[in-house]
Length: 187
Length: 291
Figure 1 (cartoon, helix red, strand yellow):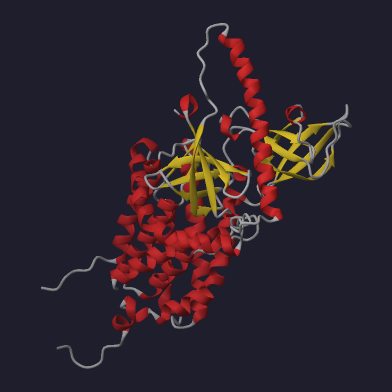
Figure 2: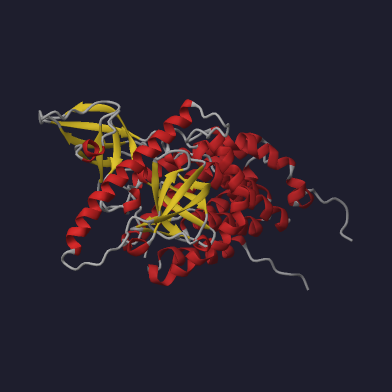
């Protein structure tokens, strides 16, 4: 995998996530598609296993640093909920990618939906556990989970557009070269 | 000798343990993680700012100001609101000064606690789930926690600065404030009232965020006081800095009866969604309040 291209894509995805989330939200709710999630699913579908897992962690860490949590009068960064959620999501995609036809858009959409649900469950559970210290205001976990599930569905809709675009760029990511079948003898 | 690639399971295990420890360790051991947000924002903000502008264009929070020499009705109304706010503020200031003079007779030192500096900060992004927006401008621009954010094009309150980074600040939007400080106190003023004494004598109400962008509270009626749709809610809460008092919180959009015949429930909605403003004016209190 070309890490340079991945980092540029991650930078753009994080910027879109942070800048467009308000406009993309469903009405007054916080349900919004996640550009970062779709990129993570794409990387997990195509990159070598270890690269895919590291890529997912990098994207999750980026989200953890962006999304501060209310903590009394101020805000607090909690590293881990999204990073771990993305790591497990990446692993789930890596072990299931051999079962799907990766060039099919439906596969990307389906894996984005499942991945989003997994990230929502893991992140909510971790935030709930972390909230026991009382230093952050997690709010109602049920509401957070519903928002996460809604965002997973919205991300799956976004994947319909984003996955084909990213698949076209898979050569730039260094995936197509890596995945090409090797015929003949090794020199 | 071939290079050995670690197995995905081993990588997963090691990373998972590290992340769980980072997430669940007591806050005093993980506070350093917040230091990485500043460099992260330095990198992300140049790209997220155009996205936020696009976001404000797709889903505008406030109407853009016309820059023509002849001002339109909208701009005239904005200026009227601005002047009304300043006028009410000035009257309240006179009242406060009178009280100070009375206290000075007892030997208290005079301090101007209403002074503030302003800083125009464009929105760079936001998180609807936490009810916060990020604006460009941080500690380098002398912005401090507790500064009041006002919409760039009106006297509409947006929120309060909850966190200040090197180049960006996080504003907690008042309609989605989840902190446990309790309801927000406002004056509920009849539409068209411009007499400052009448404004300051308007009934008080404590508003709580509902979660959908509106706020709800109970108001006492009778003795010539009525709750009507269209009334204006202006901030009058000692928790907020003096420079935020009398700013517009929103308009009454619904009045509901309660079990008590002399009480009404009012639903207040900001004149636009503070989550989608293109830019804010930060009022940074000076003097004791700012410190």
